[in-house]
Image 1 (cartoon, rainbow, N blue to C red):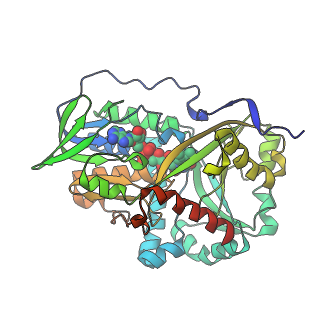
Image 2: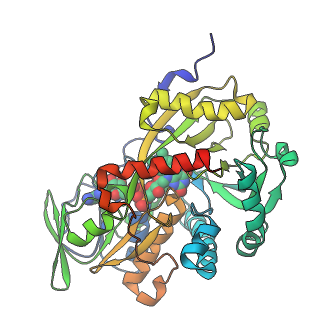
Image 3: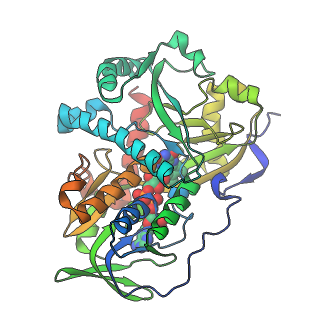
Length: 433
Ligand SMILES: Cc1cc2nc3c(=O)[nH]c(=O)nc-3n(C[C@H](O)[C@H](O)[C@H](O)COP(=O)(O)OP(=O)(O)OC[C@H]3O[C@@H](n4cnc5c(N)ncnc54)[C@H](O)[C@@H]3O)c2cc1C
């Protein structure tokens, strides 16, 4: 009988939080009035709060659940700078200049997070190195070859790896070559989130866990936010709720209509030998493929486990079945994973926009960071900072990601049909290679 892909002590908890105690904050009664209310304690909200508090603003962060419960601590840990939208798609939609600016600033976002980790000495197992983006088809490889000059212009030393040479980076013959991108990183996302929370609190921000904001109302030049604990008045608001955006306010409802909420999955394996790690990932860094909904594999913080993410649909059954299916994708392509089993598989949700670009902006005076498109570790953290800069001084927050959220083309069909759009991307990945 073939060996089961799941370990006997398989868990549905994120690998990152298994040994972490709950994040404690002082049980103070919330303020009634602040300069800035930040809604959401993920990367975007905490990063915005940190920048604002350092600029001397009185800031309160309201988190509906707890630090560690949301998408932030559920991420797979990739701190990359490869946008989900291809250069060609972005050029078609926004022009070559804007497309290249998005690619350039995506790199700045990654560098910004690395700077924060350094400056605030956040112990989150940051590891930097090469990333390999493996082409899933010959056409995908040709697209990489065509984009290479522009990628080098915007990102520097990007290398094209022909199929015949790919064994030097991955233990698989299943791909069609790919590109090697320098200075990609991985980290422990739950520790980054805690580190950002600690830095924001040290800078003077207050954090209120288990405090959902249910409604936001404008009163003159102030905002009134409703919580289960009463009303809060704020001069400015940063909405950093990403996939969970559900606040009673007309302009927020309009923003929400521009987002598709996507379920995502990540996995960790049991410990493997250093030899297995070296055979599967000679690059010893993250590897993803060129599908729209990517498959991803990387070494964990000490190089003894693989962290993966992949795609699975409703028809794949419960989380255990999904874990088998997603890990099966890798086992089929990496022969040295044959004896490796999955110890954890967990799920969460993130928000995707019609242009596959994260957005920061202002709607009816409310500052927002939305639609991280699965690149929220760098992008939400960076754009949270940008939203804060816009509040501090409008000219400092300038960014190419400040552009209106495009409407979803199929909105007229109604929200229940939105998963069909995601299914559409899956089908495109499978049949239009
Ligand atoms: C399985 C999985 C794997 C992923 N892997 C990666 C990866 O490897 N690399 C990467 O870059 N990204 C990854 N992502 C995406 C990443 O986790 C998100 O992009 C990131 O967390 C977004 O940060 P955020 O602050 O914008 O939103 P979130 O982290 O979602 O934070 C929003 C917070 O707002 C809170 N909230 C919502 N509504 C309210 C309200 N009304 N009042 C108060 N609080 C509220 C929520 O509880 C939540 O904590 C992954 C996501 C998942 C689910």
